[in-house]
Image 1 (tube, rainbow, N blue to C red):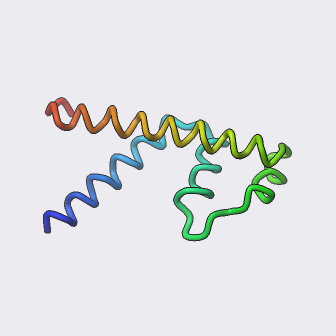
Image 2: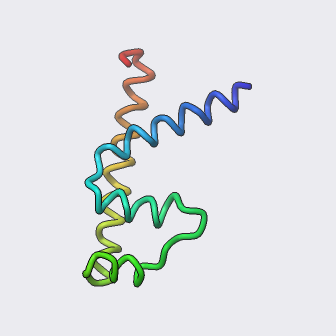
Length: 82
C-alpha cells in the first residue's frame, strides 16, 4: 500500500512537472522518455523539420526542466507547503 501511494505521488509529480515544457519539448520528452518504445530521433526530426541533433538537444533541455521541476516539487512536499 505504501509503495502504491509512493508511485501515485511520483506519477503526480511527473505529470505536474511536464507543465513546464512547451508543446515540442513535451512531445519529444514523452516520445523518448515515457513511451514504452522510444521514438527514434529520425522520426521526430522529420515530424518537426529539424535535425536529429536538434531533437537530441530538445530532449536534453526538456529532461533538465522536468528534473528541476520534480526536484522543486519534492522540496515543497517535504516542507509541507503544497
